[in-house]
Length: 201
Image 1 (cartoon, rainbow, N blue to C red):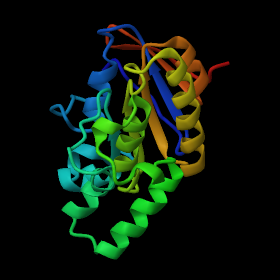
Image 2 (cartoon, rainbow, N blue to C red):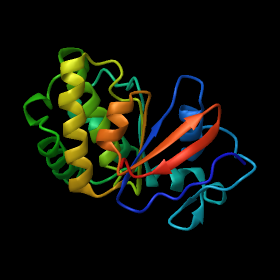
Image 3 (tube, one colour):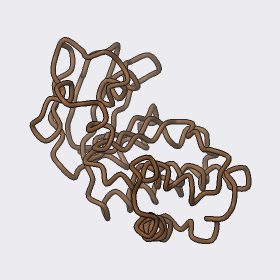
Image 4 (cartoon, rainbow, N blue to C red):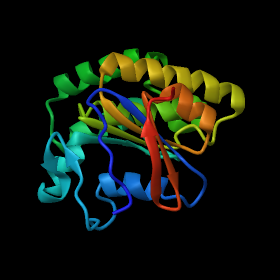
């Protein structure tokens, strides 16, 4: 009852607020990782809680704060969702190559996650989300574990990638500068209440 907002298709909404304000809870509700709220959540006009979970999972690309990567190669990590769907091997190879080029990961496809930098691992998590061809990206403080220099660099890469893909994105952060830099719209949360949702200006 405290949250009511509309995010235009193709835009990035930066969700900002202090610890405990409800940012991650809201993201988890959108991803249906929590029980449904008393209200409704619509994606493309369809209530997400009326859709089968498997169908919803394909429509959402979730990038968590600390991406869990398997000990397999980077190529296998990116292809994980496609393998679950038993996609043709040739199609998997083509898609992984496309996504790797997009994220500048081509040179590390045969490596293991432990051999990558924090920024590269975060891009692998994004690649795993991108191959789903999602209608919505949910990013829960994906840069908080990176050092300041890498955070600025990766922030610019994510913004560039989002504009290129044109996928509607909800981006959680506690960093006001990050929110104002990345968001087409900025939603300010405080104690579970949406205080404001508007353009950065």
